[in-house]
Image 1 (tube, rainbow, N blue to C red):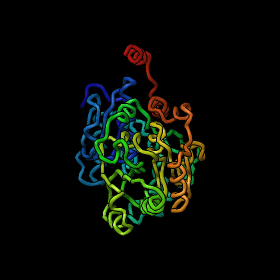
Image 2 (spheres, one colour):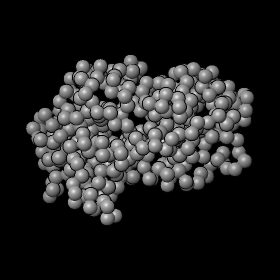
Image 3 (spheres, helix red, strand yellow):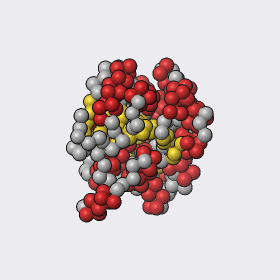
Image 4 (spheres, helix red, strand yellow):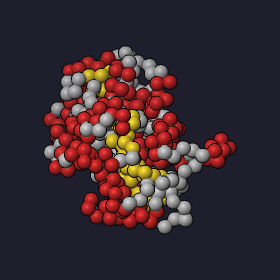
Length: 380
């Protein structure tokens, strides 16, 4: 047990390279910069982002081998450490955090952060635990001291799913724009396709998962490739890798498509690409769109629920195409490659800045920065 309780405990399954995990890691950095004591509580300390955890944050490894075993371990943590507040993200951490507080009978303020469009995900994914997520949210989210959604679309869906009044849900966009992003965006890329004089590169970043609908992107790229020389790079890992590799071969695109897996620094790839494409069937927010906007890369995205239209101001700052529409996506990519790009207003990006979002989370967590902490921050 620590001498003084943490101000914030952040509870996740692990620190794999997902978008939500990156967001929460960014928030943790933001909380530390505000002078707060932060614990990162993981059901199991694993994942490629683990090495990026700042040294100022205490890592708590519950060493849980299953979802069921996580609950008693989290109850024990809450009773022993008594954090002022706990932020949980994704499922099952949200539900377990709420149950743990109820059983532990501690005053810790529990805030759950919803990162996905629950009703769509439950319809599209056959896994039983995913199909039951809306029911779990309806049963347990009323116990939350605070509920955060990462987009207006997610908030509306969550209100319908849980039957809670929308005023109980705080909208806070994901804090994906940080000083580190711009530093990493300036790094060089050793891949030969990104060298001077090479054809333009179309980039996609995200899990190789049904949600991301990469088959639509690959078929759209085939149409683009028939009209002009270019290449496609996909960054990410996931269960659809073999299916996508087979589709690349079937379409005869082996020479012009590279699936590079997980990379520690996707921002350099974004900054050096001619166009960034998101082909998702559904999203919660769409972190990669805001990140690509921040480094100045033109965007083509499906107008899926939820997030892309909000980030792109309904098409003002990027191209929006119907979900699954190969022809429309190909035409939008060709238009961007032809030089028809849209400039983003710098002020628009402020709502995705780490400092802006972290302060909004602190209000929901009811942890305002003290005058002493403000003095420390201003003196740095």
